[in-house]
Amino acid sequence: MGIADVLIMILIIGGAVYMLYRSLWKKKGHCQGCDSVACEKKQL
Image (tube, rainbow, N blue to C red; front, top):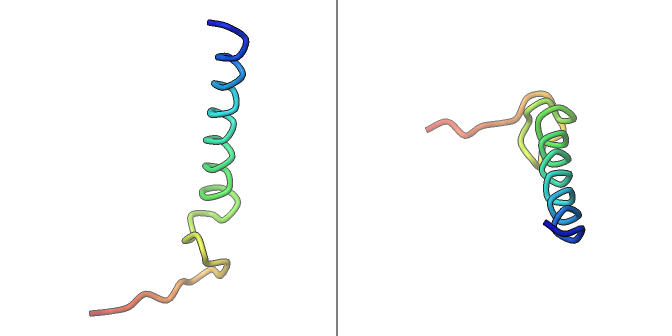
């Protein structure tokens, strides 16, 4: 593996960790467009 491969791997893993942080821990599992605690859900 060359230095370019290692850098690409670090960028991909870093991006995945950031996405997990942003969606799971920062928003505490809320939906992507929702910043409130209780999301409204349509009932059938």
